[in-house]
Amino acid sequence: MTRVSDRTESLAPAPNPHASADEVQAAYEDPKLANVLYHDWEAGTYDEKWSISYDERCIEYATDVFTAVAGEEDGPYPTAMELGSGTGFFLLNLMQGGVIKKGSVTDLSPGMVEVALRNAEQLGLDVDGRVADAERIPYEDDSFDLVIGHAVLHHIPDVEASLREVLRVLKPGGRFVFAGEPTKVGDLYARKLGQLTWWLTTNLTKLPALSGWRRGQEELDESSRAAALEAVVDLHTFDPSELERLSLAAGAVDVRAVTDEFSAALAGWPIRTFEAAVPDEKLTLRWRLFAYKLWLRLSAVDKKLLSKVLPRELFYNVMITGTKPPEPVEL
Image (tube, rainbow, N blue to C red; front, side, top):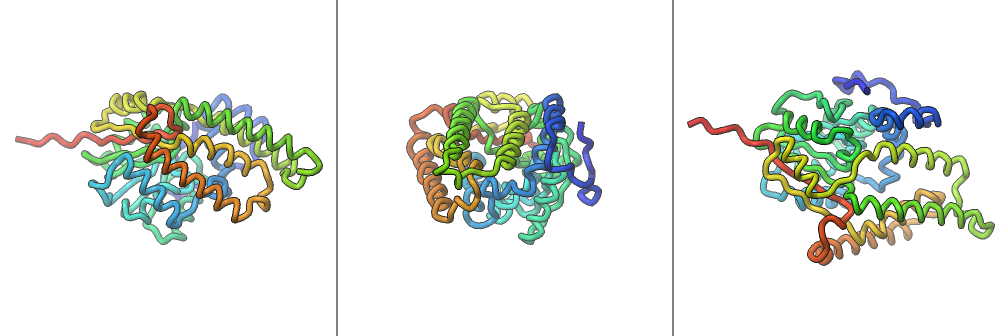
């Protein structure tokens, strides 16, 4: 069990980013240890790996995702906390997009909190941070107008307990928004496509004619160990209706789940896996623009067409919002 650290000034040095096989094996028995090992390992290169930026591209993405599930009528929010913030992608881009005024980042990984605070400082944003266990959030009751998270709930062992904590630290009437969570069906096809792409790429690049497209074996082995840890830290997939029931059981009201990315995920996961398997110098600006524009086009198809005709369970991402019940009015 990872101890909750109170203030960022007291953060201990991050663990060795190159987890050994023994550490990976131990992590199978302790998902919270696995989360710390994996996310400390990834902290320094996480933004690059997932094409995260803090410019107009990701500001637009973050605000679009947020408003797709939460709407626009309640903002801007005076105070917000991001649970499992990673490098701060969701919170910092929503702050730049005018959705949030003052923010707090929290994560189980000290390395991620450190990077998120550094990103916030470079952007000139008003942000503090703490190392935090999502099942025991180290803030007082009624602290925030908004709690957000992106791709975090599926890492938490007890999701309902975490949602109860989220409601505790929200002010009465405050809102939570969690996005980027994998659906049960979406996770199945994403993993299969990723595994097939990895196998094809790493085997085809053994051919002499394609050897220049092969990463060094040490890098490939390290990526495989990272993938092993990733499989350990990804604890859940969600049916949208199930996630709504969990939120209601935790005490939320006005709960609503929305899904997105079907064709975009079918193309995006093979592309992302291919990029992880080949040397960075092969990924030219032309390639990156192609991949990004393809994702934009397919996302538009998903939003404007496929979301109207396909069951929401088929889409890769699920987003959930709800509010803390307001205080009763005294008569």
